[in-house]
Length: 106
Image 1 (cartoon, rainbow, N blue to C red):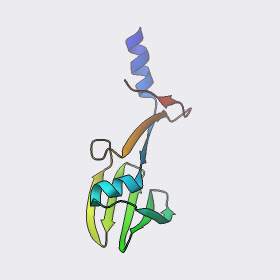
Image 2 (cartoon, one colour):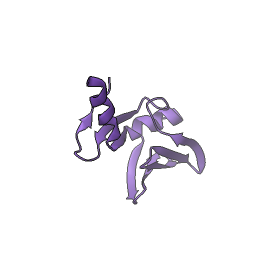
Image 3 (cartoon, one colour):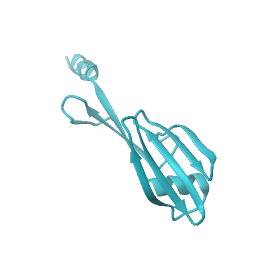
Image 4 (spheres, one colour):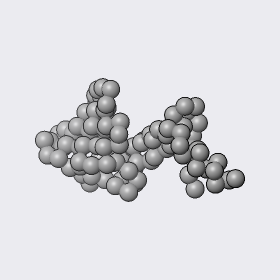
């Protein structure tokens, strides 16, 4: 009986939310601390952040599907899926799409 309940729970749509410590991630990627966000833009499919640290300029684009691109001074530093495996600054949370209830994984 328990097996069917668990299986039925995974048949419901699930939303994955990625949270990232942007200044911490930028420090991980560049080796330089004190990054600050000075602008942001949001679209239906992504959020983009303008960041700076001293004279360095960065653009961080986080797509709603978990993909991310980071450019610093026009040079690509990251282009791929943002997960806890690719950065300790990322945290994933899962929610039921119909109710918004958080799903806790063991």
